[in-house]
Length: 414
Length: 111
Image 1 (tube, rainbow over the protein chains, first blue to last red):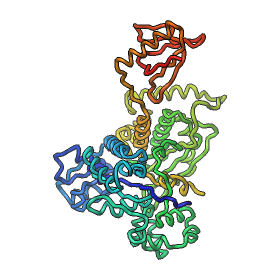
Image 2: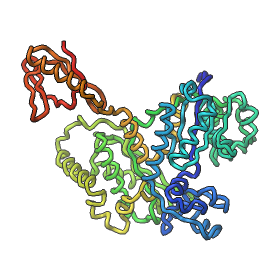
Image 3: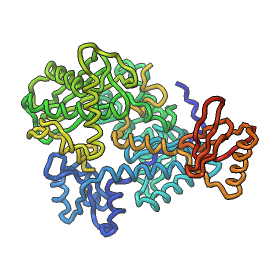
Image 4: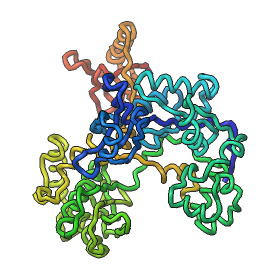
């Protein structure tokens, strides 16, 4: 890898308490009150998705249970999530960034990368640009963004997470020259891509700071973790050539859906109901996008988090397909073969190796045309009248999730 | 070499994008490329209509520049009929012809 990044200016802009900020902007009456956005309290998803800074002052943290948060702060304002609105605002913010540079890449709903190298002539130095972006987003959406600035994506991400989020201006510039002085003394868990498990591994090797990791011989890390070891070493040394790529989301490699179940599913027949629903969803999306896929994968996760169980397996189909029947048949076969019989809480189906549906092999014994016509008709009904307008009868059983899922995005209310 | 070390691989493998967000983003990007319909002023419309009439009367080839949502297309031929009711013109290309909506014509050049 080359490290010829000189002169690039890359930013990571992160929205503070994004969902909560959007809600506070929509409800000015709550301005001086602690606000949280929380999933449905009646179900397992009853956790805090976002807490505004005022709520955080009461010790409320993201991902804790709503009950615990209410115990800490009884007059908390609890708002039900509106995922569609958050996606809309996220794109509105993308558009604001795009008024500074065409190189904008969303990394998640509240984090986006910007390459402003070509905009310096127009909008001034990096700090001025960051300040101007911050003001504009605040004025137009009421959301505060924190911006990390450096010369590549990993450094701007670490500048944002470790410094811009903690200082008063919400902007931090980390030039690569300051790497050793500023970034290296930080504890290893504050590095990008180091999770709790990797942190344990590293500390057991005697690596406690980012600097220590950077100075560990690359060969040692590579022999231990292969490519992942090399990735960590490069990040610790601030080396990264990844371009900010607006078209990064264009290429679809796979279409998949997964869901967390509201309670533990123990019986094979019960599990088949959401499995069929997921197969149908996956195929429906594959059809609307004009694809067929030839690899079906199924994954599931056990109910007992202390003793992780589950599997992720795939199989290749003889011909590419986008028919619910065929995908479900394969998924069922995979599940039967690999399930250990333990109760499960999460299940997913993915269709990959996508090809265009414009040409396909005619099969002699099975009338796919008729099936496809039927599925296209149900797709159109769903498109027009909503996805619960027509369902399989099995979805009406207690184990069915289709009606509940239709109201949600990413497991939270639309 | 692994994909994580190439191009944008590190970020493509680590990002958290909701499928619905991703789809909305792709739509957003497509709409950025959308053309907005140009507003022709009266003199320009008059100039174009004169060129169309001239093509029809003197059987001269004319190149029409047509507005499309995502690009601009060009058609060359001789105007052989102007339909005031349908607000369209018939463009003849050798033995074939097409009807073109007048509102889509944003420029015309006599060959």
